[in-house]
Image (cartoon, rainbow, N blue to C red; front, side):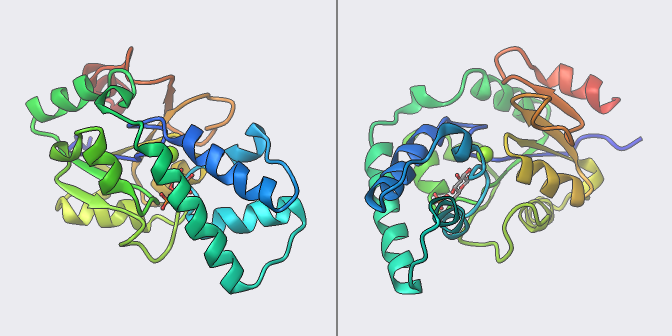
Length: 219
Ligand code: BG6
Ligand code: MG
């Protein structure tokens, strides 16, 4: 029976609630193009890279843009997003996350980040969480986004850990698929009805401790 040697965390929606800022910034892009973006449609963008998210939004609005115009809109969106993120403080770290990471450290379980975001480091610095991560695999390093397993396989390799000894924490359907294709145990953060492929689903870290993870993993 494999034991847990490393935990790989998604950032947005797992460590910190940035989804609301992504939504405000993407909604402005949609509004500027003459249509609206609902919260339900925003779900489709979770875990998906910036340019792929823009493609999904454009298809929702039935809008076609040149490559140049797409880059301009995505750059504008990112500037707006980062401006919104300036309001963030360490208090925006999701409930229970710090305690959970402290417990992992106490048990010598390695910690890595596996995020599609190119802003991962900036956000971790803002919420004062950079120090927890032994490796960061982000949107600047990967060539294939979630649901491809690359992001988590790179993290496992950085931490010198075989996939069967890794646990992934994810709030996005694409991220759970990525973890499962990497051969890892996947903990969904959110709702069972959405994260159907996860090994277990929890609402968040405020009522989930490392001891619960070990039981779920079969240790
Ligand atoms: C993911 C988010 O973590 O990162 C997506 O869930 C986002 O919503 C993606 O589009 C890319 O983020 P960024 O910060 O590089 O635009
Ligand atoms: Mg996420």
